[in-house]
Amino acid sequence: MPGRARSAAGSRRAAVRRPGCRNAGPRRWIITEVENSLRRLQTDHIDLYQVHRPDPTVDVEETLSALTDLVRSGKVRTIGSSCFPASDIVEAQWAAERRGLERFRTEQPTYSILNRSIEREILPVTERYGMGTLVWSPLARGMLTGRFRKGRQTDTHRTGYGFKHYSDERRLDVVEQLIPLAEQAGMKLTHIAMAFAIAHPGVTSAIIGPRTMEQLDDLLVSADITLDDKILNEIDTIVAPGTDVGQLDMAYAPPAVERAALRRRPVDERAAA
Image (cartoon, rainbow, N blue to C red; front, side, top):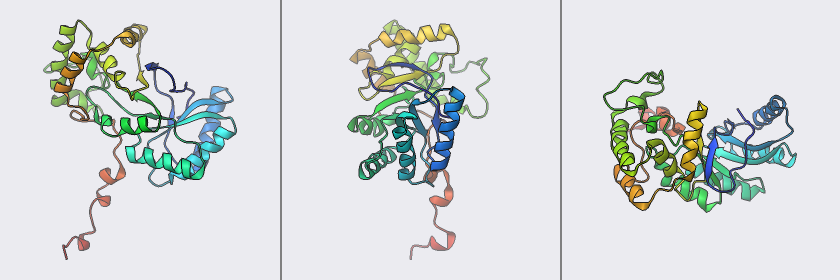
């Protein structure tokens, strides 16, 4: 759902929770949901409205046209995207320029030591277009807190369906390598994880989701931590730049990957000749 949030422009910092999002879709749904949000929030405008994941059934120009009207009417200040592939980000920028529409000013992808694939294309593209990048889950959904260890049970309820990455041996192996690295540096793993996320020049802010004031205070400490090249080089050795480790059930998978029918010819058309 959409929600009120501050712009991503400005210095790199930690941000609490992520701005609300709405799947990119038909014009009437976008307009309706913004009106509903304004009524629920009892406000007259939304600072940053992000569309969450592209809708392959809707032309991006339709989405941008609706968002442009909302900006021009004063109901939305700034627009952005979330979990868009690099190609869709570029297409949206070109469509906005071609049609004279508002362009996406922000992108909100997942990014952490365990999930570095956005370093390949997403971050270079957002830097090229001057977009703010608000990365989410810098602690990899809790994997980088140190709670989840190899060969140990956890009291969390999240180890069931939908959270298979908590028991992914490849991710746990990386955590076991990061913990001694943090100890040698005299830091907490959470602090290294947060500092890593905002060390990239293409990252504007890292979004956190603390459940308690103690967690919030702990995470805010990392905003003042700077990792030197030695530590960053060691992290690169543990997890190669531009790669994801193990299962990533929170990443966006395009229909071309998820739907077998889009990557297989009909049976009677599969012959070579």
